[in-house]
Every structure is written in C-alpha cells, then in structure tokens.
Amino acid sequence: MSRKSKTTEEMDRQSMIRLTWRRLKRRKTAMGGLVVFILLFAVALLADVIAPYGPNEMIPGEQLRAPSWRHPMGTDILGRDVLSRVIYGSRISIYVGFVSMLMAVLIGVPMGLVAGYYGKIIDQVIMRAVDIMLAFPIFLLAILIMVVLGASSTNVCVALAIVYIPRFARIVRGSVLSIRENEYMEAVEALGIRKWRVFFLHILPNCLAPVMVVASLSIGVAILAEASLSFLGMGTQPPTPSWGSDLRDAIGLMEINPWLAIFPGSAILVTVLSINLLGDGLRDAIDPRLK
Image (tube, rainbow, N blue to C red; front, top):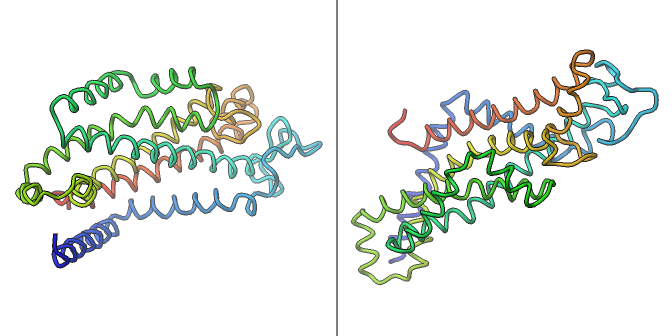
C-alpha cells in the first residue's frame, strides 16, 4: 500500500473519531455518565489522599456511629469509617472491571479474527467451543470458575474474562465476515499483503467500534458481578475493602443501622449507572444509523 493511501486512511480514521466525539457530546446523559465516571476514577486513584481514615483502621469507642460531620457515612461494627471503605472499595471495582474486560478483549478479539478470516475447520472448532461457553448463564459460569480458582480479586478478573471471551469472539467474527465481503479486501488479498498486516491494518480497525461498545457496557456488568461474588464470599476477601463484602457484613444490622448498606449499595448503583449511560451514548455515537 502506498504512503498516500496510508495517509488517506489515517485521515479518514481521525475524522471518524472526531465525528464520534461530536455525536457523543450531543448526548447529555452520556456526557453526564462520563463526568461521573471520571470523578469515580479520580477518587479511586487518590484514595490515599481523600479518605479521612485507613480502610481497616478501627477507631476505639466509635462502633456503629450514625452519619455525622466526623464520619459522614457512619462507622461499622468494628469502628471503621464507612466513607473510607467506600472510597477504597472503588479501587477494587474499577480494577476488576477494567482488567477483566482487557483480558477478555486481548483473547477474544484474536479468536474472532482467526475464526472469521480463515473459516472452515478453524472456524468450526472455535465457534463450537464458544457456543458451549455461551450455553451457561454468565453469573453461574463465573461462580463455577471461582470454585475452581479460589476466592480473590485477581481470580475474579480471570473468571469474568473467561466468561466474556466468547462474546467478543462472536462479535469480531461477525464483523470479519462482513468486512471480507467488501471490494477493498479483495484488492488487499490480490496484492499479496502479509496476513498479519491484513489483520492489524485493514480488518481490526473496522472491528473496533462494536468491541468498544460491548466492552464499555460490560465493564458495568463486571463491577456488578464482582460485588455479587464478594457478597457471596467468593470474591474479594476481608479485610480488603469491597462494596460487595461490606454489603454482606451489613445484612444483620440493616434494621438498626441502614447506612451500612445504603452507602456501599449507592456506590455500586452510581458507578454501574454512569458506565451504562456512557456505553449507551457511545453505541449511539458510533452507529451511523442512529442520530
């Protein structure tokens, strides 16, 4: 491919990015979700500076205090500041959400590329394995994997990545099958360009839009799944702060101390909602059929 055609392709890609950003900015709910998520990310990054206490610091004589100026979200049964634990818990949620989706993308996308491009027996083998994994409900499959791997934040990332690999593989495979029907792909193959260049320069860039949308929406689901697994005692283990494990600890005290469940639950709600709003806006901005 000539340098001029490469430059034209890069300009077209940059113009598409600018067009997508303009469409995204017109969606107020998506921009609101983006702002909230950026704030949550900053809180997680600066937890050591923002949190008034350590996440596991037990304050003598301050057990089960109601929300006050000293403890804006109250304290738990061990005298730990709930606000500090909510702030530090955001690190686990964001870590699990992003790392699990990154792992799923890095494995699922190449699988979809290979299956869609080569077809035949390779496609059959990969897609039948994907179909078997998709036959299991997401949460049930994650629990089964956690039973095998053991309870920890890292294993939660691995389990959720395994759960989402088939979804990315199917999405990319479908995109590749559509892209191969285009005339420019026939020209690329006729020129005898190496396979890896075809994958990374011509096919992969055209598959990124649906992958980005699914990944952005799946991060929220992964955060919710991590909280659910921690709630069941199969995710992040004490004393590491986690919104799900804090909810589990608050079950027996909800009637007399409801704030112990309200604040971690609200943190999950706000985080997942902001990511879903951003993902919906990104989907509408990328799809040229939607306005």
